[in-house]
Length: 103
Image (cartoon, rainbow, N blue to C red; front, side, top):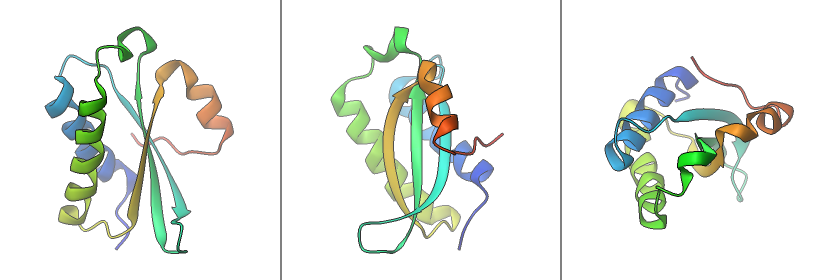
C-alpha cells in the first residue's frame, strides 16, 4: 500500500534523529519511482546542512538507510525504498528533479 509522503517523512526524520541526534537539522524529499527490476519504489533523499554533514559518519548513513528499509513496511509502505543523501543547500537541484517535499 502506498502511504502519504507526509507519514513516511515523519518516520524517516525520527529515524535520522535517533541515529544522529535531535539537534541535527534534516529535511526529506520523496519521489515515486521504479526499482531495478521494475517494482514500485519510493526514492527518499535525506538532506543535511552542508555545514554539519561532516558530523555524520558513514556508519551512521548505513544505519539510517537500513533502519528506513526496516521501518517503512511497519507503517504499511510496501514500495521498495531507495535511500540517498544530499545537502540542504542542494534543494534547488532536487526541486528541478521533480521531487515533492512532504509537510
